[in-house]
Image (tube, rainbow, N blue to C red):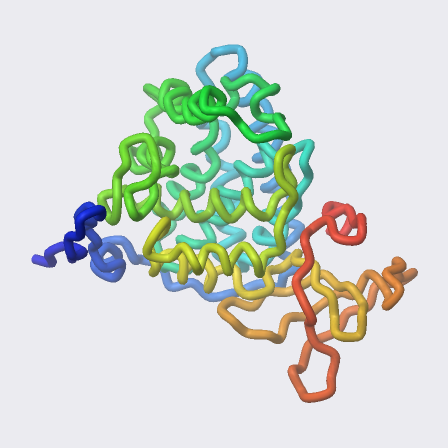
Length: 344
């Protein structure tokens, strides 16, 4: 029987149980997924699933705000459709997950987290049942915020201690909303513990290491990444590259190292939908999918060297050959006053 690895005791550091990820996956892995469609054809299917989830989630939101019990069963076929799209080709769903706008942050964040949790599970080769449960975890983990006042959620200045405590109460609200919902215990664990951190500095119970439930560890990484890269009332978005650097710096402290590495591998160095500036000054959006750390994505150029919209978009491929056009830097999703949704 595999025994958890325990970090050495220090005066100020509690014991942290850490079971190796490959040991946790022994009874979970069941998928062997290959990309079977191109991004353009998959976008049509994924978009329909996304819009259906959005519509149903908005309906659920109204029900929850009226303190009525939501009918989560109605979500299931649309989540299943998105899951199947992610299995065929994650690029389309990742692109949709990166469409950001401040005014619709709440529901976009929830759907984006559902997508990214599922994409991360695909990278771990989890079976379809687990992918479905992970998607629900991402979608529902912040449902308790629907019981918080809009004035708190939209505050643009730093929260005081009372406001922080009220914000943290979204976990209790979420658990109350989902009580008697017949969701799996792992989904409920993700709702309850996605703000726990690997070194024990999170909340609500200061769990640490692999004492934090598996889905909650995945959801915590996804939640943090999507928040950092989204426009919010109190923060401007940061580029994907900066967000992944921050996550990499938090490996082993805030998040499990192997899971952070899995997340970065799953969405790639330049995920579809990312804005980039080229070495010749043009601005492009990444329009295909490369997992891992490869530097050869296909790009659709949208701004010329003077940052003016091109009358006709052009598609280029980065070759990596010396002297050829290359990616100079990642850009935030609203760079040069671009509307991220208009790029889609």
